Image 1: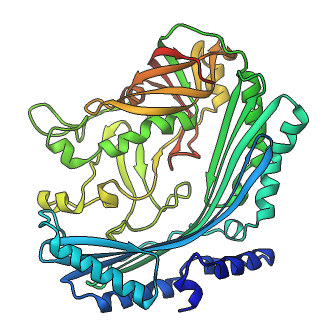
Image 2: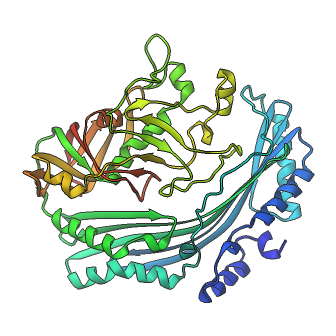
Image 3: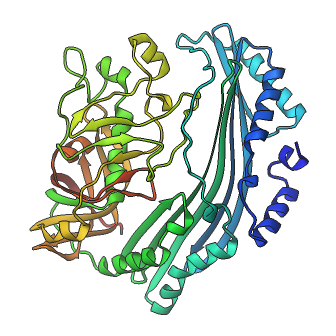
Length: 473
């Protein structure tokens, strides 16, 4: 292995990347290759004296550009690799992480993990390491992202900066974050898995200079070239201007139209609640009083189907989890009916069922299958509703019902007679994604959102509970 790989964040390696970027030759060499990961795994396993050993590798090369106050402020590079050695001695397990892949660094990490394992208490839920597995090939690598230069990021930022500077009444801030990453796993039982991917994320906030209006739009793609930077700037600017001078309306129960980011902000908690063990032990919204679960019962509107699928073109996740268990399509809710609960390897073995992987929650992000009603069409069909851009500061109130509290932000509007009538002050809400998904009235097309890793539609739902006003913009 090269010296640069022994020092993943060395100035020498960063200089090499900068030189490569200028010549447009950045590719999979930015992160540890399959051969390099196999080499690290084999060297670590050869050093191991434990009863069982697993090596997890995560490597990334990230570039970013930040801008604020209508000017670019920082441009950065982060280049690192993390190797986690997990050793099992008897029924004891311990893990140590390092980014030093030199012979000395690996030897030290292996020895430390074994020393800690001897001191650890027995793990009553310890599972044996997996042997060789078969994995799907997921095409999550895009050259448009891997070959990105600092100039490319700057040109993207200017799509927001230039119109804001010309406007005089707007201030913009945003963050462009692009990553090239590789994940690998190897075990003493003979398993080896490797996956590489690219990702590009963009978020933009536009504020009016009078301090009363704010607009936010974001995007996330594996392929940088698919992000419509100019379109995002136009929508965020329009939203900021439209949200100036918000008026207060009374809190209460309203029909709501949630843009996709707001939907993702709230329903992301549903996936974590689908833990089979919690449901079977009576600690879940999907538990039945007196014992049992709600599997096979209708728990949401018939228009709701929730799934995870790392091979879905809109999701593109890794084909394996942290244990090396293959990940495939999992349908959790189909046409409103609870079809699947999430099983860890331990709980699955105890119950005699197939584990779902991903720590029990399936692979990749959550997808809600969309409909065919555009956001504009949903608005036109609505007599009166609150239109919400996104949510923030969410905190759980009741785990048994998944009631959350939080705030709207960055553009909240009153819809009347099929039109956006005016900007309104933000609300605090107390409500549950389960209630929201039971009260659905319209569903838009599913899109990938910037925050949360989900693919979800815009939703119209009735009787959403806003409990108080907020003066924040």
